[in-house]
Length: 392
Image (cartoon, rainbow, N blue to C red; front, top):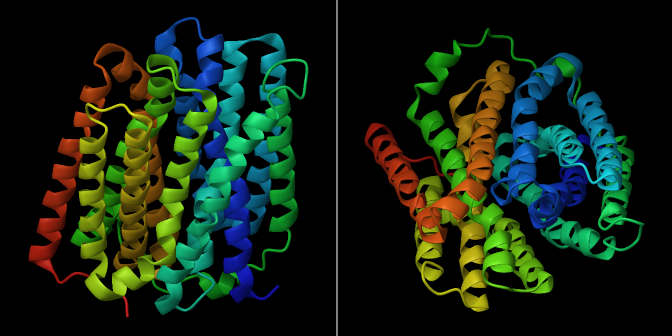
């Protein structure tokens, strides 16, 4: 396979690999509510999943620097399969603690998948990087449907509820492993910079890097809080069926990735600054739509806006990040970026259940506002120090 074709390979791998988080987000807290000793721990499995992914991001990326991306991609796909087996075992035991371990292992397996976008961007000329990242993220559209469908269709396939769901998910992780064997990575020597990289502190002091990281963190923090809490708020507090909840979550995940079709066009017209600003507006509207009205259509519109806002902030940050580092610095900057944003996502997921059960839905939504204010301050600071990056 030619290196240029890696974009299409990773688009397919994205569709399969990202079915893991859509699966866990949809059903993880529902299973957790049946196994957890306390209702406040219902979202702990989703938080554990995100935490496992976040904590493994740094070592995974640094290991790629030493051994190359392909080997680490394959290893993590195998780890994800092991996580599925552990989950099947945990459900047989009806053990909440073993279930948490299994979900953490799944998170570790996902960590490398978060790097597909960078591997695709490195397979094309610099001017094609935003389009490559967008195309890879579009694979998430398939994941939006695949993950929840695996959960629903496998629920009664085996002796214990949802064991069959994890068995189907394991088949997907095996397929990812086989596809990754086709990955044609550029020779290591071609990708290494000749100039020694700058200190990390010097790199992150650049306004463009600050905006890239804060944009990603804001998108993931808000998305994590609201998305993890929505199934619980819909299903348990407002009595919506599992099918209705699935429809809202699937629509949300589609909205996370569908905008990638036109994001490169938006960047060409209004720049990355404009894209991120549109993301902020979408998230503000998200809060307003479902703040007091809990009709099904309000959940749907709000979660779609959440997905769009996340996409604009995440793609905007991903596009900006290479503007602030040299080739020789790429792994350590990518590691810092992903460790930070996925760590924030884990914290959001961990707090979601507690905030929902103690402070309530409206307080959870209002937490989004100071996060967005911080992002806007960072954008203004960047605007005053340099012109926004516009990709031609």
